[in-house]
Length: 479
Image (cartoon, rainbow, N blue to C red; front, side):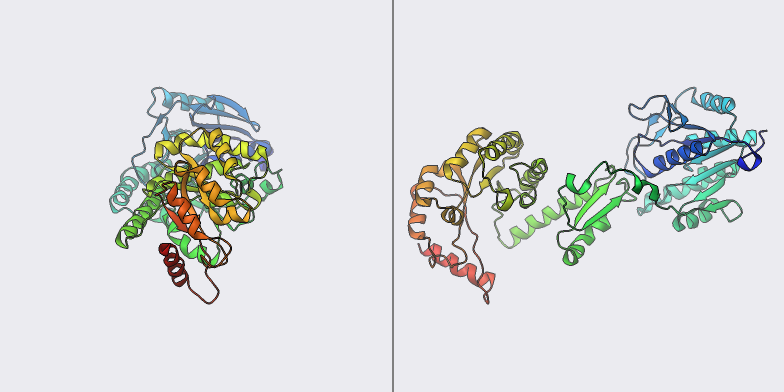
């Protein structure tokens, strides 16, 4: 039996860190195991990390002063359980039992730190430690619980008939990271102060002293907007649905808030909730006989398509949502600092649209350009995009304010190059400003345009949206 000796006894220890999860796999358990191994090594201890193979990571490597060995493993399929993520088990591969025990025989650890109470490597290394009289720590990371009654019952059964008896044989000292874990382990595994240590997870402030390598706000176009960061893989146990359901209330108090989820998506219930929201919108539109005649990629007011790579991502998302709403026209705005001004910006936009066009065509979505440039310049962008699904979203107010002859432009563009039209003369009521709408409507009829023309009109102070919309609509209908 190995004697336990540490720095107090005047020599370094040999410590084995065992976890099925280990970098480059992303996750709290993996990074905690790697961080501890690095700190053990930095303190002068000899460290061996044993884990399961992952992606293209090497079978063996030296990192941060310690050795890592990755054993061949079998990846568990995702079947919808509350802990459903990419778990791999090494015990199912022939020869791994002997190989693991041989590694430990040769390393002769003074202590073993196991991670995960239901991982096979923890069990196998724990068995070796029990037989050789080597003390073992076991950190509990993930709890076998589920809101689903069926899964919850299965997990309780597994804990009772499999995990607890194995842990009773291994007799590790438990490391518990939060109050929920303490209460869980007392009930499920019979832990107590006599065989456990409570170490609440803390933030390693040393990481904040390191140079910044990634600007998440800039990468995702968040700017100075309020930000909620949700850490951890998306699994049924952490499905983010409460966060999604709370967002309307959060947005009421913090308009413009953004949410960034840091982790992989193994369970897409929150994405399905978005689909349910779309279905609800469609049902309400049908119930109240409201036509959804288009959408707008509003994020382009923050990340413009003329130069910001993020804009392409937003347009792709908007194409998908527009298709899901069973409508065809997606308005792409170019205003403010994102207004098209130079030939280079117009060419960049045409190239970006050429890349986006195949997705739009496949989805049956028209990308409508609304901006401050001439009809001729818009057609040059359309020609560069080389797609029948890139058209002009003609706004008579914008074009008038920028000095263009709207009657001439409408006739020159014709019905085949216009997807929809905005009618407005803000801040005036229609027919009471500088735009003469009788000839505008005549030009629209002349080209045979029969698609949607939308009122984008202001509401006067002291009035209401409903009242002013009725007034402007009545005026247009009268023409």
